[in-house]
Image (tube, rainbow, N blue to C red; front, top):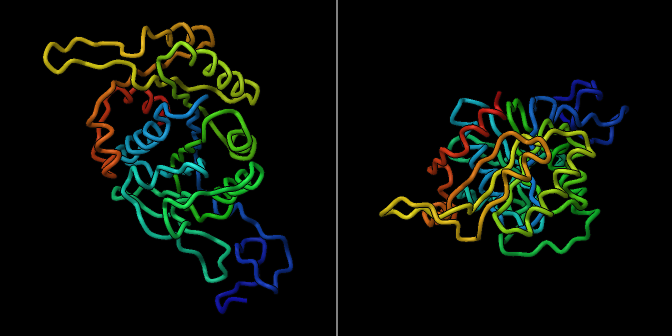
Length: 273
């Protein structure tokens, strides 16, 4: 028992031997006002970039912002923000405290719990899903206006856990222009509808390359059909991001907070609004 114990177990997050009532973990996340899940049907489409930029936009507007890196086996959020170090816990080791970026965005990620960021996480699906629940329940988030969940690709254990266990207010789907992606996007959209969670918009990353000389836009991966997909499922907000080496360079250097992608303004306004 802590020296500061109030003997009110219902409002305490400690798990000491003197506990007389079940631990109430809601105190850790009760201050989170809005949760947005960022999903993709397949990997390598820039989902973590979109998550990071939406969080940065929210923070720039003065909102208390947070990110859960739910991609347990392929976490990349800490590197994007240049965060290193270990997560701190309370005296009993039961409650974790998130790290903060340079602009104050709170972040929790498996890479912040590893001795070496290149060590692999070799876990089966149920354990991975359980870790995501712990990131929500066992982290002292404080007051958060907008939290973004960077989900792993697909419609498996972790996205399902996020949509079923967290109070997700909306979903942003990230994709790329290839023809095959239309089928994969449809799967993600249908999953959202099955969970009765609105799709706030679709972000098509690597949509085009703009020539720096003539300013003409070239579709390197073929013609986009994102408008047809959005219309089919009644999704109004569409964002197209360019192929830009500066974006990749900034992310690799951990300087994502220095980026500004005006194309995402409409999506950010819809989320914040």
